[in-house]
Structure formats: structure tokens, C-alpha cells
Length: 143
Image (cartoon, rainbow, N blue to C red; front, side, top):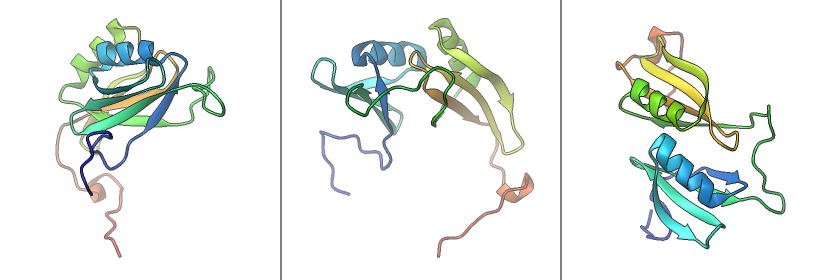
């Protein structure tokens, strides 16, 4: 892929819609630790980075809207170094913790939270390298 400073380098980039882009950027930075890398207009879009991943925050309008209360249409998973510390930071900034940090047989410790607009996020800390077959998964080799 050719590099382009006007778009994140990540291969997959979720675009999440918020009623107030600037408020969302400020909140995502404070609560979840994202870093703003590009601003497009004052309240149109922003590109945020986290490690080698990225997300775009977009404005509501036309057919774009944030989730409605009680509606989960997607979840974004982000890998972090310390789930407990990350969860505490998110809680301190008003994230609604859906599931507390939990250790899973597949070698991850995870918690799930809803952000200020109702987007669902799962944050995952790797505890061990575990073969999928060890917990009931199946490794699939590409054709």
C-alpha cells in the first residue's frame, strides 16, 4: 500500500459517528488514550490513532447517526498493555463499563465499555499465547 499522510496507515479503519466531533475527540483522548492526528473542519471529522491502529470520528448528518440508546450495532476492539489501569481511566472519565476486566481461556483479559455516544468498545490485554484449539477454536489456513 502506498503511504499517504492524509489517511491513517492502518489497513482497517472504523468510522464512528458522533453528534459532536470535538467533544468526542476530547473524550476519547481523555478516557481511552487516543491521539488526534488529523482534523478535518472544526466539527466534520477527525482521525485518531492508538498504537498502530486508527479510528475516524465523523459528524452526524444525512444517513449517519450515532447508536440509539440500548442499541449495539458494532464493537471496536483495541489491544492495550494493562486492562485494569485502562478500565480505571475510562471509568474516571464517565465510560459506562459493560463488563469488568475478565480473564478468558483464549489468553486475553478484557473489559467492555460504552463511550459518551453509546459506541461499544472492548479493550484487550494479552496474557498468554494460546492456540485456538486449546479453548475450542479452530485455526484456518488461507486458501
